[in-house]
Amino acid sequence: SHALMRLLKQGKLSFHGLRDIRPSLVPLEKGGTLGMGELLDLARCLEIAAGAMAYNDKFEDLQDALSGRFASLSDLPDLRREINRCILSPEEMADDASPELKRIRRTIKGANDRIREQLTATINSSGDMLRDNLVTMRNGRYCLPVKQEYKSTFPGMIHDQSATGSTFFIEPMAIVKLNNELAELAMKEQDEIEKILADKKFFETNKDA
Image (cartoon, rainbow, N blue to C red; front, side):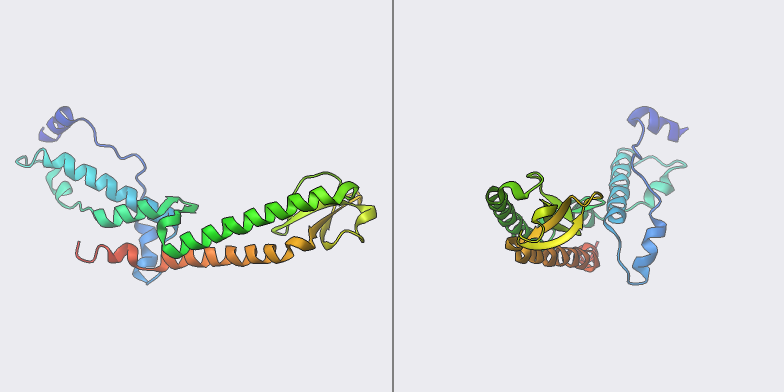
């Protein structure tokens, strides 16, 4: 058959990564948004469609059982490129997805650098008060492990204690303001990511496609 001839001449088409995206398109019809993983699945489907169209173009004069299937395919190259530019993985959006996201992330890096500097200075000046020089996270805040006998004299906020009660995890007063700033920036980053996903720019690029 002609269909078999296609396979013999051109080899197999790749459908690697193809997922049924129909269920995830339902929210769009209701004015909702897609998550990062769903957008990546959509981009992959478009990529596969584009590959299939290019494959079929080599047989433009050929009419066989597959011709109708190929004719029904369409690609949205602008949308595909925009999704792949902005989304790195189902959990990670690229810094360049928007100028505001880039600015927020640059500010987060600066805040983290200042916290690290301040923690190093606090560790160096705390002497025997610390159980060890390890920075830990408690309730999303940077803390130091302070020996039980110094919990009242070490300046900071207690967030947790060890099972034995011999160590208290204290957020040094010197970084409370910076930790607050970091928590606020993390919320701003999340808001901006949601705004980018809700922004119809992914689909506006294809209005005329």
